[in-house]
Length: 117
Image (cartoon, rainbow, N blue to C red; front, side):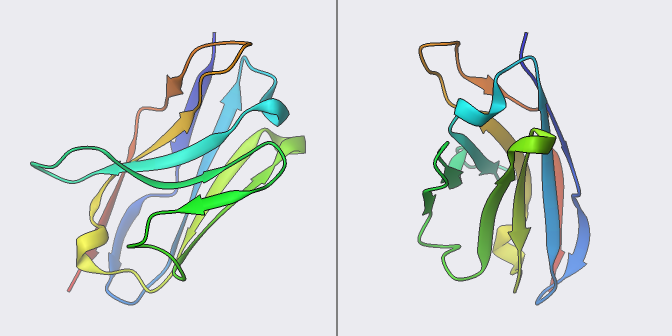
């Protein structure tokens, strides 16, 4: 069974930085497209960024130029470096493994990111 465990959330002032990590187990990590999503209070969960097995990345327009997604296949970990944080980035951030021929979609438990103005 796939398990995704996020860490690195917290409280930061506007303009600050945080790095989120997501450690995966129970899956052949290197073949998966991984992603980060977020959900703010009263809003739907939205895509933040994805990274394919080959390292191709995709970002939401709202985070382009500020956030960077990366992966370390040797550590079965995907990262989200968040710079120039804004109050509107406040949300619970979720790690995601996309469904593929080897298994279904999976989600982590989420980590809270709060950006104060």
